[in-house]
Image 1 (cartoon, rainbow, N blue to C red):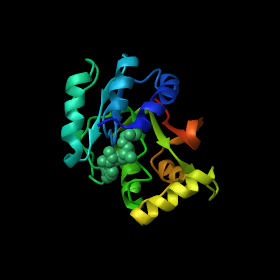
Image 2 (image 1 turned 90 degrees about the vertical axis):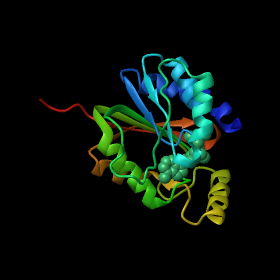
Image 3 (image 1 turned 120 degrees about the horizontal axis):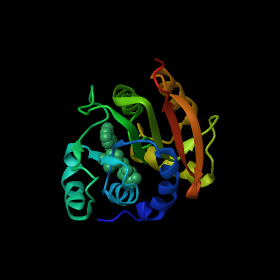
Image 4 (image 1 turned 30 degrees about the horizontal axis):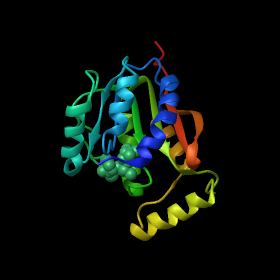
Length: 198
Ligand SMILES: C[S@@+](CC[C@H](N)C(=O)[O-])C[C@H]1O[C@@H](n2cnc3c(N)ncnc32)[C@H](O)[C@@H]1O
């Protein structure tokens, strides 16, 4: 199955990742979904080794797409639930996740940031794509409607506040470095773990 949203957003996200991941070598993607992003980004960013992941129960179709469409730098996906601790991965230069934080419960978002903190090298970069609130405000009426729809479906889900995410990431030693406005009122937010001082 193809995600239409992925087809629309993969080009603009690629342009952000081209610059933000220019000096990275390994990337862990959390919540890879259909695998469209992983296939597209890995093929166009050949300097990266791309490690997709998904919840165990969602893994089979993702693995099949990657087997059929993946390039040599795209690894077979691993089962990874953000709530696991520690994450069963080697240290990586970057973590990428798209459209996941508003789907998970807040407790899982906290676990996500803790997992990132546990596997990100120094220097390292975290890029998250999706809708976010800033200073308690939605960035558009359509995002406010989307948030209402999410919460009606699952009261624990919802569009996350940038400031709350920033507090969690700071506790993991990351610093916020970029907010890329994206089409359809989305953002790509970037945090970095700075190089270790010798
Ligand atoms: C809206 S989909 C986004 C998929 C893909 N990244 C994209 O942009 O199309 C949300 C994804 O988050 C995954 N997910 C939800 N809870 C998760 C968790 N606790 N740990 C890891 N992934 C999770 C779901 O399985 C789903 O694939």
